Length: 123
Image 1: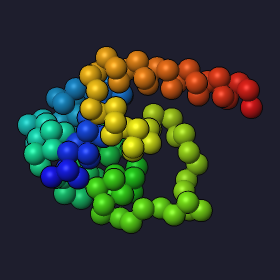
Image 2: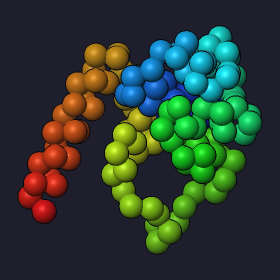
Image 3: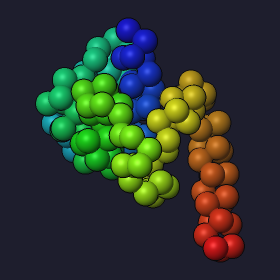
Image 4: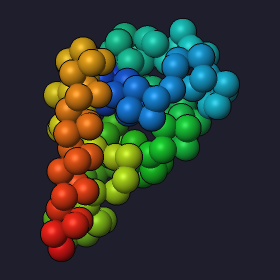
């Protein structure tokens, strides 16, 4: 169940980052909000079919979700896509943030956005 908990935390973090409510995600994906809530709490593990339905509303690539769910093997370092895609966090960071309150999540994401803007301005 640890894998389900971690994936659920990442999905919740991404949903709140956008921000979307469970009801809004339900309308956008066609997956019931009660099922989505169980996934976010780690009580259920989503099928590939469900991941496909929620990928676009969560602004995630299907392939990225499949890797997070261990349906696909991890990308080797040489094959990795460009880092820092807007609106996306590293899965490890997202997992850690998922354990924090929404206020802390928003604060950290705000700080990361400022740092990213500074880094772009310097380069």
